Amino acid sequence: MNFKTKPRSKWRRGFRILIAPAQCPIRAVQLLFFAGSLLLLAGCTRNEPRADLVIVNGAEPQSLDPAIMTGEPDLRVVTSIFEGLTRLDPTNALPIPGLASNWDISADQKVYTFHMRTNLVWSTGEPLTADDVIYSWLRALNPETASDYAGQLYFLKNGEEYNTGVIKDPSLVGCKALDRYTVRAELKNPTAFFLDLCAFPTLLTVPRQTIEKYGDRWLSARPLPSSGPYELVAWRVNDKIRVRKNERYWDAANTKLGLVDFLAIASAPVALNLYETGAADVVWDKDLVPTELMDVLSKRPDFHSFSELGTYFVLMNTTRKPFDDPRVRQALALVVDKDRIIRKIIKQGGIPADSLTPPGLARYQSPKGLGYDPEKARRLLAEAGYPGGKGFPRVQYIFNAPAGGAAVPHEKIGVELQQMWHDELGIEVELRQLEWGTYLSAESHLDYDMGRASWIGDYNDADTFLNLYLSDNGNNRTGWKSEVYDKLLQSADEQLDPVAREKIFQKAEAMLIRDAVPIIPLYYYVGLNYFDDRKIKGIHNNVLDQHPVNFIWKVKTPPATGAVQSPGMATVQLIETR
Image (cartoon, rainbow, N blue to C red):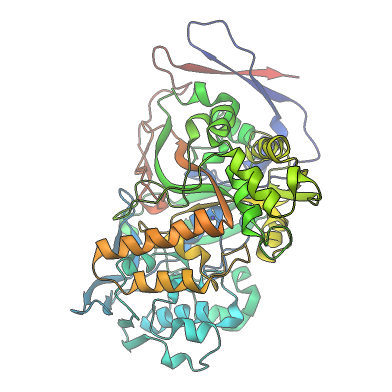
């Protein structure tokens, strides 16, 4: 689950950053940008108050519709505006009560009865009830909505059947409003992470009254009814999204910040400059740490790293030749030197990956992948009819990158892959950079050969990674389908014994990463963000990298401003240039 920034047409003078280790001669690592774009992106030229918290959020969100959104930048905003029956604890990203104050679970773990708070209202004042929750879930499942994440509701009885058109009557889906404040969810099988799903964007509660009135343009309505701690004030494309505290939110008394801005910045140099000049308070996207400066910045106390459930990998379109042959896919995977990618590009930001599922998942240990074996790769490619790469068609590798930021590593990784495939297999691969929306569309519509991809776990369970490659999952952007794989995951879902469940998952993942190989895992993420924790409180680094804004606050008397520095740490110096 993202990056794009649009340069402005006018600027007058700029700054450059010189970053050097303390007590050492300044090393010439210079990142250039213009102050005019900084000021415009921060919204400082408009006659409006500065937000209480300014967050550099990454790429421009593609949608703020919980049923439609797919990217991390979208998620961060959406979860501040809309809420589900549960929400995430900021310390550990585990589910805690949200719109529901409590719930009961049947002995067979298939029926959940949620008891909603009786004081719930929309930000516009109308009552918020169980009917709104059921409407939101069924809307996400409705095939006309075309939600990529509809599968998050397949755990409901008849959820998949309704979404795929097998049944037409939504009343047959296993979710009901028993009364004004009681929701009953009937599941197909025991689902250990169902409470986690209730906090996921696809299951958040959206305003039926507004959607039915405005249709596809419902997000443009003002005021826009909000079920969460904030309400949408403005969305300025390629600039920022501003949200304001929802005074009618059930937990408004504990929501500390009044105005929050999410800046659409995808350039790592610009993000760092905004932060250093005080125009932004938090940068919490791993790709917005300049990779060239990782060694220096990682030593500063305001740069934070942590274990994260995320994997970066290569997709292959198995519906196109020559990628329809698993021997070709295996050959491409076997010549990828992942240690080289980490050493040259990712550095402290990743760990070489041998599987799709990252370490740290609850109740799961992943199987070994193919490893690195160029000799075997060449034999497989020859068996597939391309000895030494002879006759192999020229193919493309697509990736997204911001218009002004070469610091995002997608292109650099592409260059390394291109070189490895050429040197070891004799294959010519063309690199093609796409704007974020175009890149997403190309992969979603299987209009590509190979492409970069990544996945951050939606919940702490192996299922959140392995179900990506179910035949009917909207996020399966490889075209690969396997009835055997689907049945293995279905069997795992039916298991109450966690040991038996793990073994089934391991068998399925081995099939994915060793046999079929529609993907090539490259590295596991190490979470990275930067903010001054002397001034900003309530951000807790957790394995899902989720930080609910309504739990964040600023200290009333912040420390003296200036570069954050400890003995022996790096110094960041801003020098004005003309």
